[in-house]
Image 1 (cartoon, each protein chain N blue to C red):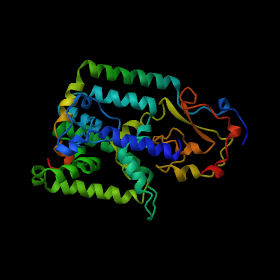
Image 2 (cartoon, chains in turn blue, green):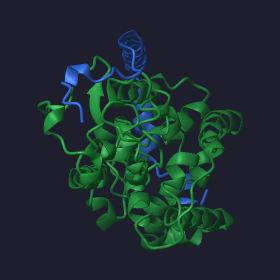
Image 3 (spheres, rainbow over the protein chains, first blue to last red):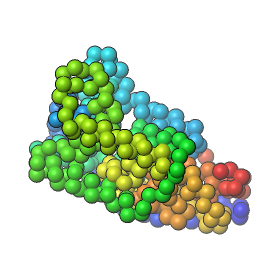
Image 4 (cartoon, chains in turn orange, yellow):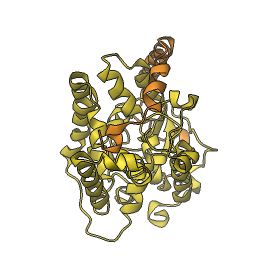
Length: 57
Length: 283
């Protein structure tokens, strides 16, 4: 026990710049997918019963 | 995160995405607008009570129709960039089941380090490549989560589905039984060696907003963090380990804490280190 303050705890390996780039790319992908109305295809696929998931088709 | 708190979160993760109870009563599927949304959990959309879409099923479907799944990848990337694999550790119902099964008294074994690469192979081969070429969802055909929460209920409830049972169903039951059995002996075997969703999220552990911080000055290298870790890693050696499911169980030790990529505490007020108890007394 050293009694150090939290601010002195060593920084972990996460890099803010890498996080910001990843987050921006992720938001871009999601936005483009929504622009292409892919959620409609997602819905169509999900409302039909998946026989592969059940194991009979 | 405390043990009870995580169990509460895991309970929510099991109940909320499967809240359409009417599906079991009327042997039907929910067909409302929530199925637009990919859940960040491995939760089968063929489950009668499922409210949301399975992300892995969605990825396979887009591969089968030969289209790039920007929406599904974007959803998973946003979650991954925010919390890394935290949904695996705190919400996933199949992860919860494996956590509970490991509490059963039996022989306990470690898993070989190379096993982690199988899940990347499962992602590339069974989720992307094979569905693209065969136009069939091959991961779904083997997925034990689908067997547990969709296969078994549908076969029990519906005579028509029961009449369709063939070899594939028994293969799926065998895979489920394999993972149920090994979960009593190995910590989270499915998550660590086979789950393609975990493979996707693990790519974000290094750069996600939520991070683990480790203080070498207070760490005594006692290894108790590994004992309580649900995926059997040493967070003090590599806090950004892709294996880490960010359950935050290890933050019960004063040398580990949840932080952010900007080095700020994401949850609750900061506790001065001097007020914390040594790991040996806590764990």
